[in-house]
Image (cartoon, rainbow, N blue to C red; front, side):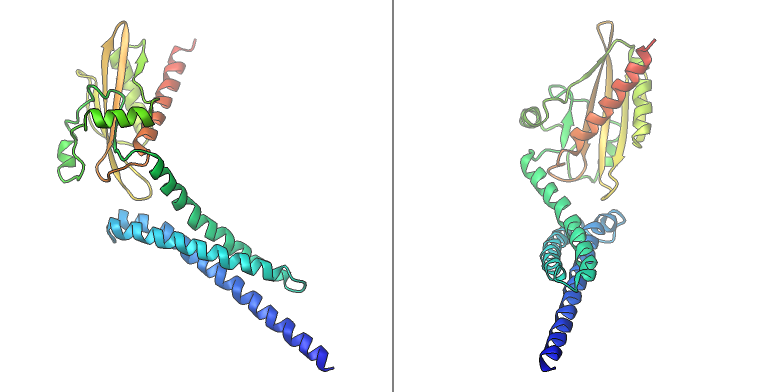
Amino acid sequence: MSARIDTVTTHRRVHRWTVAVGVLGLLLGVLALLTVLLPGPLYHYGYIGLRAAFGAIRIGAIAGIAAILVCLAGIGMALRPGTRRHLLFAAVGLLLGIAAFVPPWLLARRAGSLPAIHDISTDTANPPPFVAILPLRAEAPNSPVYGGAEVAAKQQAAYPDIQPLLSTLAPADVLDMARKVAVAMKWRIVAEQADTGRLEATSTTRWFGFKDDVVIRIRAEGAGSRLDIRSESRLGGSDIGANAARIREFEMRMRQMLREHSAP
């Protein structure tokens, strides 16, 4: 009888600890994910500064690791006979911990593998200058003046695919397409000059609300035209590849429109 009571007591103790560890892991996972996700919108709408936002994300990623470890322990405990019904707490917490840790870790790895530049242009020898956007950049930490040969060399090493877009169409037709693509990409068009083949716009990132400025220059070349595009961040030493990705997407959409235009 005494042995049976001891067995029941032990089972209840294991049951309580299994539930406690699973719930703790789940709570850690929720808190970690919120700490990673919320700083972006809070910075975007002016509630916290950029340093505080990045600091919170680091804390959230560390909390994600803690959630992963606790939940792994909880899963191990829940695999014992009689406690498997409590596996869900730890399993969900594990997924939340992974979601909190992996994206910041991947972003940090990507930042370490790319050059610390924030100004990308398809023409590094004579990059299109900003004109109409300059008043909007008056208080921006990053200068609108291109960084020169050093930045060009770093760009060429990291993004050799960033090249001008050549077309057989007239500059006016290409400019019309470029405006449509800019609107489709949800850029705010600041200025458009048909006579000079220029378009200036601002792209706002979704999460943090960072503003990156874009200038497009289209000139006649041979029987067709050449489009150059430059994208520069207003803030930050490294854009972690954002400007290059923006140019790639723009040119991909432009090529699609050009193919549709030339299709019979």
